Amino acid sequence: MSETDWLSVATEAAHAAGEVLRRHLREGTHVWGKETHNLVTDADLEAERAIAAVIQRRCPGHAILGEEEQVAEVSAADLWIVDPLDGTNNFAHGVPHYSVSVAYYRQGVPIVGVVLDPERDQLFAAARGQGASCNGMPIHVGPQTRLDEVLVGVGFYYDRGKMMEATLEAVRHLFYARIHGIRRFGSAALDLCAVASGQYGAFFEYLLSPWDFAAGRLIVEEAGGMVTTATKSPLPLEKTSLLASNGSLHEAVWEIISRFDPTT
Image (cartoon, rainbow, N blue to C red; front, side):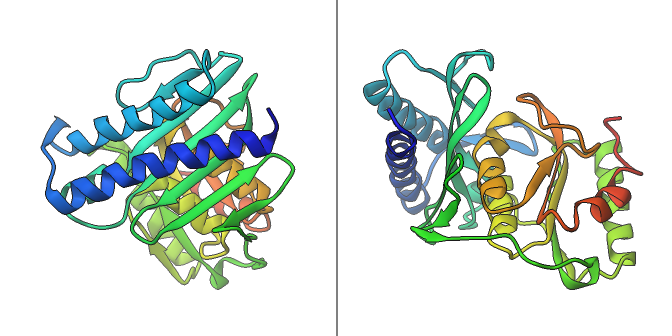
């Protein structure tokens, strides 16, 4: 299969999950907590099963790693990494800002990635070496070279202690650098797409799981941006800090957030 074929599988899987999520948001869904602030819903589980059904039908034998039920080794030769509902806390409270993330990795290398925003009917997509798009139209990172020209996105891990305080301190110092503003919308996959689209100059979070960034990182890179850990190391397929930018601002944002990185 070609990159176009893989992208077709990812797109079909994302839309299958998106239909599930829209139905649950409209009709209601059962919500419970892994922790009081780390929620899961029936929609998460049904959407992940819908994604898995598409992949298993079209790519039998491929491994699937998902946030909820699908378990696989990241070393698998053909690996799909999926987040059926990125933004569960938003979803559980009826906030229509959430996404579906589906990525295919071959031998640990990202080949295709899609992020679907079901509420806005926006599909962000990328294939390795072929650029990035939103609903079929090419997207590119912004051209800004100074922090006082951009918005910066941020994510907060579920921790309510040291990591939260570190994130708040980094945000404080980004404001001292005269950024236009901070945005925290609660879906890392969509935040990465905002960097890829030029809406944000950068996005960072001190701890994310592979399903949070597997698709979005490729979309940023194919849009001309840069994605590393918060220490400027190559991004691993494991829980990690993450810094995404338009490339030109990577060093400037890193100089700020690295001072407070609680994972180092």
